[in-house]
Image (cartoon, rainbow, N blue to C red; front, side):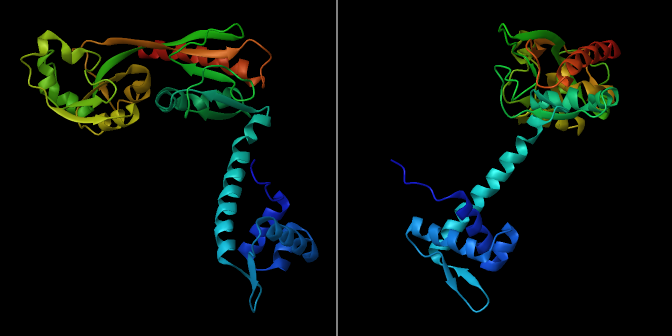
Length: 300
């Protein structure tokens, strides 16, 4: 069995006294009497079986054991505070929790956030990009955008964006390339590779490329870095049109129409069929579907 942990109040008193070097200052910070703090720290020392403080001329200092314990307590309290701050939006009915891939958030969703806020004042949007979501828990997430649809009875799944891979380069590189036909165009600039797609969606495995002298400029493990390298005129990339859509519209990159495109999995938008955590969830669901239709029209 695990050894019983010390009382949490004692750990808070310990942290305050260790930081401030004074029992009286710790008591003031915690809105307690000095006697109460002293009693909590005495119980803590009894619990760990070691002295944690020693008296000095101006207050108290930490023993070697106290320093080691304070390092752990400080780290734990910092992580606990961060965790409490992270769950803060879940209790707010004005927050909207959207789970989606990070590159999609940066390339397509973030440029549309201001417009969503104008149409729905007061909404606070939270992006959850660090993990793949396989179900909608109304406590953890309101909407999910993913290439993998969630097919369960309590989830509504709607097609959001068709997607395909396109060849891109910076404006100066495009000017140099001109109308050079495919596949000869691939000799005009280094190729920028995505680590998970080393064959450019099988473009590089085509028989027509056997006589083409290809230079590999860089291989990156994140499509956001791939787009950044493309905008910096470092070569030709082959990547998701949805992720690069905003950069294309802003003319920071240009598509090379002579290089054939490759279909990719579409993006899906999902919401719960049950009562949502916040009314913004259903409003945002419809707003995003309309935004996707508008963006498709604009690209045409």
